Amino acid sequence: MSDRAAIGVELAEQFTDVAQQRRAATLGMWSWLLTELLLFAALFLIALVLRILHPDSVREAAHHLKFWIGATNTAVLICSSLTMSGAIVTSRLGWQRAMVRCMLATAALGSLFLVFKGYEYYQDYIEHMTPFLAWRPYELSGDRASQLYVSLYYVATALHAFHLTTGVAILLGLAWQARANGYLQRHQNRIEIYGLYWHFIDLMWIMVFTIIYVMNR
Image (tube, rainbow, N blue to C red):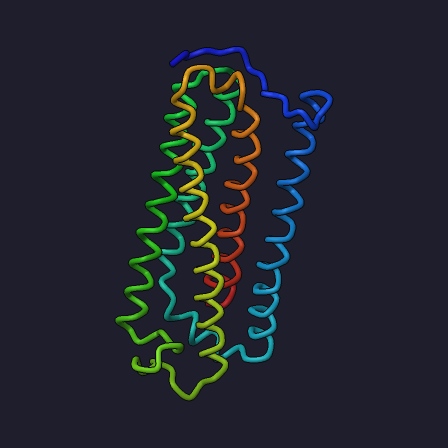
């Protein structure tokens, strides 16, 4: 594996030059991310409306959320953004080995986030904070607004976890491909484009943490 390579991009036949191909790939990723942002924005809007209409119920439900886990996961994803940025910078410099290490570190941090999230879901189950399970009595039974808010918490965090799981899988695939000699000479643009997706995942979690965990405590 070459540690330093001339940076380039393999040009697809439908493009006239590399710059056009880069712009098209970037535009495609941004367009898709905006549609995902609209999905999360709808969930955030529902959370804010619930906060306005049923403040006591929402505060009571939010009191049962594991704030320390949410805060820890926020720190984990911020660190993963730094390692992902390191992967992008080293890819631009042609440092292929360093780039792969940064990508693997990013995937490890993403996996750590999922471990913490799984533990949080387990604690929620133990504490009867699962209003959608008919066989598990809900802790705040009778409070429909609270049930809706907790269900919204599960939808938002599970949707984010799905995006993160997909992101880790893609990142590991890219890291495996990047072991080949000359990878950066042909596919450096993939690292740049994927970086947008990873930073989007991090940004969405910061918003989930702020709106679901912090604002309603």
